Image: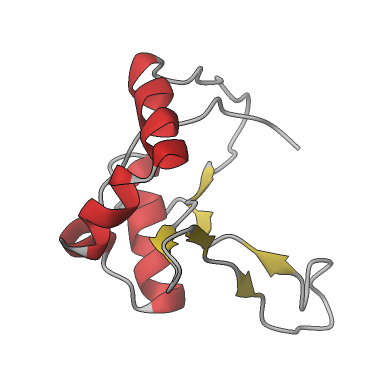
Length: 115
């Protein structure tokens, strides 16, 4: 069984996958020249079989209010990104080296939010 199959077989993850598949997530229309942003929640099976969530530590910069914080992989949409899913996949690759397009599976999307 592959790690992807193993995590998808976990009861909690399977239940989450069913719920995500049942709802497309609400999208927001933004006014003005805002760029959307997207993150991913990456799960993998731990050595004991329970799901682990990947978190990153943001780089430290004096001008960044979130400098050094723990976060999920992701970031702002680039002009070449076709949608926020591609943004999340690209940003994850850039930040972690994990190729979700090759090694992952998108289970669904959550509602858009605005800070």
